[in-house]
Length: 157
Image (tube, rainbow, N blue to C red):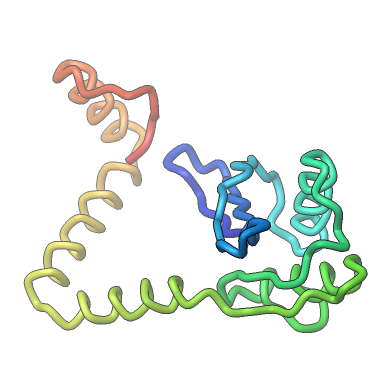
């Protein structure tokens, strides 16, 4: 299983989770890597996943399934990561859509139906656009954050 997300510094970070069964039949999951990726193309992500599995001495013939969200670069049936991994791995691992991602989308839709939540997030978006839309306002924001002792080293909201 993998998923990629941009962090607050606009770096793309991909998580790689392996699900496996122990000799006694207990199913476990382990986060095996958090990887900075400089490109989210399917070909690059495939190279990254295969490279990391090889680095961890996890043979590709043990890969029997794969799980991603619905983004075309991940789930695309012809050139997405899942298609490329099927071509690379001996067992042609099946693709399963990540239902946790679907739950996230449902929660987003549910929040949008609550007027107060919608207004709050709309206001936060406007504040973000106001501050980050001007170098002067961003500099003032940074100065205020620093004066309040809230500076965590990141330069954007």
